[in-house]
Amino acid sequence: MARYIFVTGGVVSSLGKGLASASLASLLQHHGYKVRIRKLDPYLNVDPGTMSPYQHGEVYVTDDGAETDLDLGHYERFTGVTSKQSDNITSGRVYQKIINKERKGEYLGATVQVIPHVTNEIKAFISNDIHDEDFVICEIGGTIGDIESLPFIEAIRQFHNDNDRLNSLFLHVTLVPYIDSSGELKTKPTQHSVKELRSLGIQPNILICRSDRKIPKEERKKIGLFCNVSQDCVIQAINADTIYEVPMNLKNEGLDKRVLDYFQLESKNINLKMWSQVSKHVLEPDGEVTIGIVGKYTGLADAYKSLNEALSHGGIFNNVKVHLKWVESEELNESNIREKLTGCHGILVPGGFGERGAEGKILAINYARTANIPYFGICFGMQLAVIEMARNILGIKDANSSEFSNCSNSIVGLMTEWSNSQNKIEKRSENSDLGGTMRLGAYKAKLKKGSKVHDIYQSENITERHRHRYEVNNKFEEQFEKEGVFFSGYSPDGLLPETVEIKDHPWFIGVQFHPELKSKPFDPHPLFKSFINAAKCNSRLV
Image (cartoon, rainbow, N blue to C red; front, side):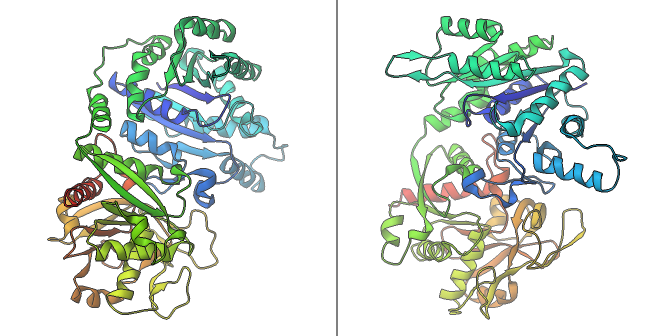
């Protein structure tokens, strides 16, 4: 029988509900329990796929092809449990489902309302697709008091009442700010946040209090008194030097014991050696490298969240600190390219869409190729690498992508038909909806023996996650191979190029998929291990 933990947040956003949920899940795993984590998002978009990265951060893609919230990346990285379509829902998806039912007459003429129809759909999502999990952790997006999240709060209140009350727990993440002018930590924001939550019918069982310094015992006692929470259930969560310290910090504060005590389960003396080793490698590295990331969302680190973490994982494996140098692709030109990328031991062009900044990325790729700097192109970064080499190696000066050019030599073109992960044919056109119509999710690929990627993976057959509408045209394959450029990986049917590399380059690899989505701190992705090692070798040549 699954036990449910509902995680809410108050006072301000970005307090780390996702990180707290992922850390708690990892702790429960160490106690021997099977855990699943879910995200309930209040926004009206059907999925994040059409949202600006500046608004939402990165779009995380699951094996089964869901475009989801970036918090699901935290869940996977911390627990190793593969997320699914059924682990993320938005208000948009809830309302879409209800309206479709209403149009089909499934409500038999009843007035469709927030209660019970919306709340019932949310409750059904919470308990759907649960099998032998011991714990289901549900993170509620947004901040308590937001009008958008009210149906979700009402749904979890009902869920708690509908089922055995001792089978669900409310955990509230809140802020205890320090006011410099008075030299005091202030508990009032937390009190008001909990008051708001209680006014909606929910009494939190445990509080996680975020702060930039230790919260004295007296303040925690005060919080417990005014929030009607036991003092030992007021858990302080102080800023950590690395996110990988958070599970250990919460363990030291007794979070896992409080949770297990609530459910009347025995707690064990668990060993978090895995997390301590990861943290040690992050905080005490034996060297450092600088990776230049050439993108167009460089103003918001969350736009490349999984990528940042995967690079860090490569650093953990190679015992080096990875510094990220963000380079805005729109600002790159032939006169400043060397200046902007000086000091980079490796260059990476991540995934993206659209023409903006594309020429700057191509300049960066050319610089990496000609200067023998390790280069890693991911998705769009692979497509642009092929365009750059077509222009400057094959001499096809008008080589471009049909995404933003009607040129006669479309090196990259729109995918109109492909076989999905369930071996069904999917089709789209220029006029198709943008949301959810890409090649999404896990797909198999076959690597050529003797290639660098085959050596890196130590396997001929791999499975990686995709998110793209355009594909590299392989009609120039023979011309490329004569120049030492070859497509080293293909889809199993031999039609879609999945990887490209240069034979006589220290490390130049482009991949059509997103390997960053499968990297974990305790199991770094092989491509990132190899890329950071190449950058490390390059740093010691300089």
